[in-house]
Length: 112
Length: 113
Image 1 (cartoon, each protein chain N blue to C red):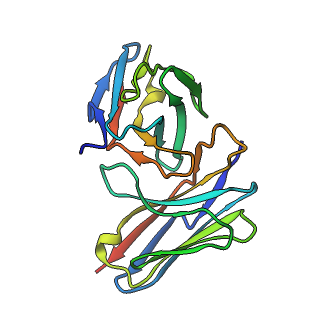
Image 2: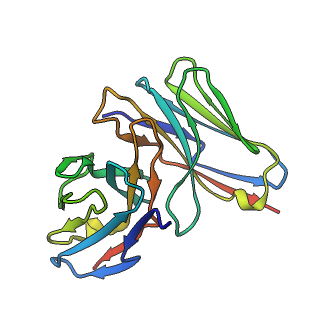
């Protein structure tokens, strides 16, 4: 009954390092997405997927890669971390276009 | 791109007071949603609205989908300390990118006991 699980919860990276933020859902939802949340900026869409094998860019995709090989998992990759990517990252899933999203509890990333 | 203007940015109220916040858009939305986020957690869905003019309640919370489809408001009656958090509106337009949600910047609510 986990819903949406994000790991890790906290991460500190050095500039130039790479890492993958994990997102797993057990709700059998087709739609998954990644948002970043910055103070005063609300939630901004990075990438999304409407099903396994299908991904697309959101509002702020630069510096991030995604893939969707299974319905359950939607990892977000930072290839070369930059201080501007310091943020809180949320993964969200949705069952149908009409449904509201279910969010994970977030990953707080700091790039130094 | 589409933007949502959410106001006020923050509110400081006394316990027991009523709260009202709203969202406006320059574009038409087919769905309006209201979320609450508590510290260290992801947003949680409070109310979903699917029809222009729709008025929906969830306990002490009431939200309405504006007739023009360009706005929505959320009211909280008789606030209590656990209402503290950031409230986000979100809109969806099926003519947009696969129906992705667009979020307002949030209203931070503080309640003084």
